[in-house]
Image (cartoon, rainbow, N blue to C red):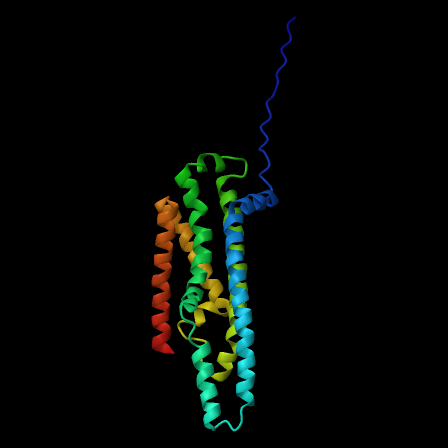
Amino acid sequence: MTSTVLTSTSTTTPRPVPWHRLAWVAWRRYRTTLLAVVALLAVIAGVLLVRGQQMRDAYASLQACAPQASASCGFAYSHFADTYTNTGLIGALFVWLPAIIGAFAGAPLIARELESGSFRYAWTQSAGRTRCMVGLTAAGLLGVAALSAAFGLLMRWYQQPLFDDGLEQRLHASVFPVTGVAVVGWAIAAFALGVFLGLLTRRVLPTLALTLAAWTGLAFLAGTVLRDHY
């Protein structure tokens, strides 16, 4: 008698890659960008902290000036306004910083995979392309929100004496986008544009250029609306 042994093959589905491992992948992906942005923010923070403290000292001296209607107090007020309301090129950098943070994090996310062809390997692993993209996008989104929020809080602290004295308005087109919650929204908008345009162009550098151009157009439109209504 001949006996036949039937072996059954396992049909169990492999477990997906845990989220904490995808977080490690996200760190490997974003670490260069993150460290560069943190270094840039550290330099900007140093400048703002030093200049902000100088502004507070000057504002305290201005408030202590008496009588307020005297020529010397008027000259001190004009000197304070001319010194601290005209930020020059650094003010333009502040307005562009949310776009820089968001664009450099979002533009390479998909565009680099498509441009290099590594998506054929990365998206066919046990993580799956949906899970992989959700993990990387969520990590990038949280990083962009945290960095831009820190910048927005610092800018709010820096500009507080100017708000108190009425030299700047919170809803001014050059002030509103870089303070409070607005700066987080603008940075996330640049990140989302970078991810979307990277999917369309499949090239990193064109995606960066298009993201910054699209963000500039949105910022100009929003600034026009603010100027017209406020």
